[in-house]
Length: 165
Image 1 (cartoon, helix red, strand yellow):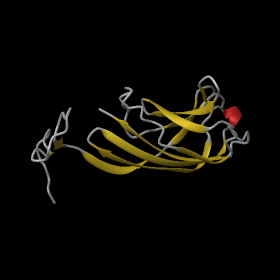
Image 2: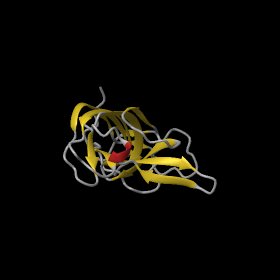
Image 3: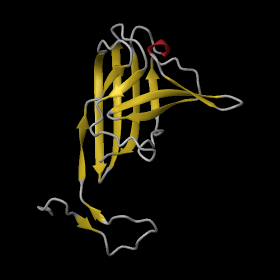
Image 4: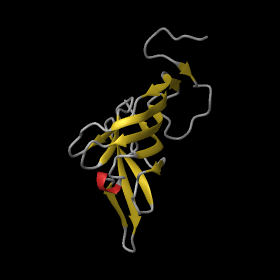
């Protein structure tokens, strides 16, 4: 086991060839673990009843990769757009951080009829957007409770990667 005991230091890759635009060659942070995703609603947020809330993450430098699986049994009269809350690290909210279309896979309870569901980041929240193609442009709109099974039964899985500070 190699342990770097001084803050700000790490594994130095300076012997490797450099790419144009390279800004650093020190790997100074690596972490992996679990996190607990939850549903968040932009209107009335009455804490959905959940029976599956699983998440895992891997952080390499300032790049974070997360995966999640959520299953709710009741939205408890919540309203507004459906979001996934509790990311383990805060997004930098810059264009490079919002890489965000890594995939959302609704398994049950989503009645959105568009082309696909996209993800965008805001701090520690994943915002879900339905994307529909039209002849003039792509149309994006938040996925709301109205596009979910109204009893609150829903299962969704996804992954996303983003930058943090």
